[in-house]
Amino acid sequence: MVVSDRYTHQSITPKGKIERFRAKFVRLRENLKFLLAILLKNIPGYSEDEIQKLQIMLLKTTFFTDEMDFHLRGEIPFEVADEVDAAYFHFYQRSRTEVTGLLHELCPDHYFIW
Image (cartoon, rainbow, N blue to C red; front, side, top):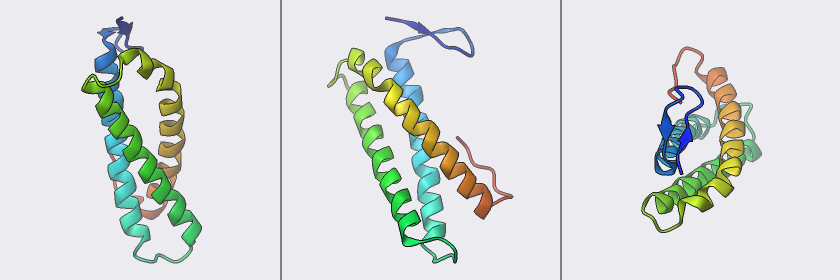
């Protein structure tokens, strides 16, 4: 099955779709690691609960990235990936929005790659 990329209208295979989405999760994970490194330096105003929430987000991001690796190695059929695609996308959008807000608050002059 081949789907069309909504931005370039080029054909993209299920494997290509997963590879692109995996790259987004890797960047989210790296930005989360950066954010946690800053917050763990005991910046005032951030509670232990907020830090723990970000650590859980990091664990989920790592889990989803690993799951995408299973798909790319062929251990899980690509058809199954379509079923969980919406869950990945929802988690990614929600997490990215939250992390972006915190990063811009803590590092307003830094440009982050998504």
